[in-house]
Length: 293
Length: 160
Image 1: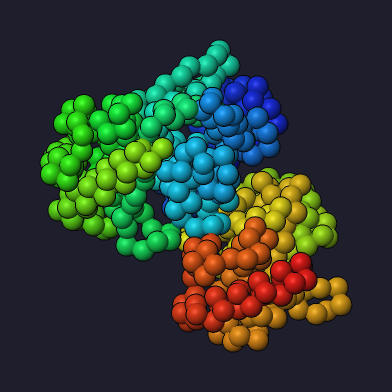
Image 2: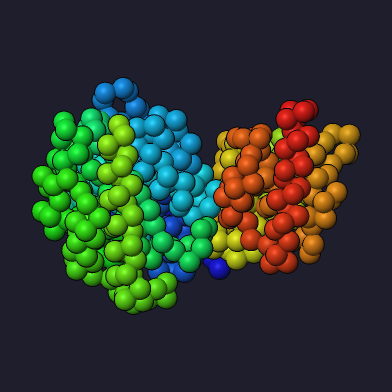
């Protein structure tokens, strides 16, 4: 299995990188971890003329997490760094957990947070909690930057709102609200090196009374072409004090919104069942955790 | 077009002529001649090709050799101590019968080293989680986990 011939670039600064991205356009692919890119190149699914290796650019790496100020995570921050970051574990446990469940230890030491979103696989792990946490992405080009909610950046299977000459450079996570919690769960055939058949994240924020739901975001992965934020769950549970019946009703609403497919990993019917199971479990967990804050 | 690059493998600098598309595993095995690292699935799934890059476990079958310049690469050959003695993890694998056909062993041992470097007192669950990217088709997992637990004991005592 040989890769196609390509020209290799290893820029050292963001400016050099963006100049290359602008000049080479869609004939180039950005190489971060390569855990998705190399595999599709080996399968000859794509054959880029140029590879821009961004691993030499320090500015694209790192977790900047200050108390009260959310977090900024560079696009080429490795998933293992997020998994083991004490700051992320404390402030965004759902993200640290999701990052720690991607692939294997080796994959997590290679793969980047940016790549996990830019690969735009419906079954990706980290976009689900990132959307539930309200993450934004920063898209940079030689002519400037723009910010976009991650939810609007991933448009479908392998489709991004990314103009020619642009690249994702960082993620901006808002500071978690007081009396709020986010939880993540997934279902797959085995723990390691599998692709989720359903994953899900739920963020709940409570009113000052510590019981009434002020805000709820339920995001599903692997059951829609892109991370799917439920509208009905929010509509049903906003302003409510949660009971088991209400949670079950909301989980059924999420089931109705999911549009899973049959594939090698699971049937659509099974996935729909799992949506309900995970939704019930996560709403309860996040509700309990938010109350405890 | 071939390009001359330098790779730091096990503390020794190798000068190799490579093509940009050459994978690290092929260069290590075929050009450098260190055949301890194994090429299993070739797709990054099985972990047989695991090497340490700056101390972190990476899959050399989906890693470009050209992208590995300037890094410290450690293969299984690099673990043997200068005296010729086996590394404590290797010794623990031998002592616990954790080697069967041996094909997964180099990758398995390097992943073990990486997990012990991060956490010298791992729980069984932690070992399983961090070793889950190394597949053993002889299915000798139990003894492998025992070997890592035993190595951890030596580790915390001697700090290797």
